[in-house]
Length: 258
Image (cartoon, rainbow, N blue to C red; front, side, top):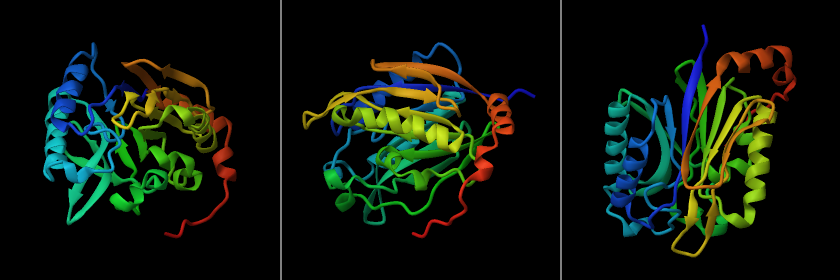
């Protein structure tokens, strides 16, 4: 039986610290999709931009966005993922939600907070990876700065798809392109990166470069425009390559201590 996953990468500019308008904008973009998707991927902090001032927002905005995601997936019969500032129990997290078509969800808190911007002082770091089983694919979603740390992404749980959502700026975009390809090759998994585009309130430029790579590092999708790119991933292709090239069987055995 052929297993395929139809994926939409939503590369968009973001309105600074304006969750309501960003939700409106993403609703309009997603509604323009010409065909049904299995999974819709939004950038990191897609409701606010990469803000270090989550206290400027109503503390309930995270819950409102999660509810928006749950309503949207039911309407579209598609899963959706993206991260946002989320307030809970007196702390903020850069939290990624993976919301399935029935409205049930999983979440992952960004493990590697971006110390260069002081994210570690504002957002509580996560301590646990997330693997989601969805439509025959095992999916590991991570966030932006996590991309620089291969041990955290190491494919020890036989996942099929590695996803990074990001606000990755232009001065370091070569690292983004290079590391996405590297993560695909070393983990023998499809790897997707979805970045934002445009400028933020601080004047930082984000060039996009959202892309999809197969398990041998071949680039399947690339965009540097404000647009949605769609692709279909084949589980049969992945299994065939892994059966022929058993590189994962030779990986080092180690445990990560947190």
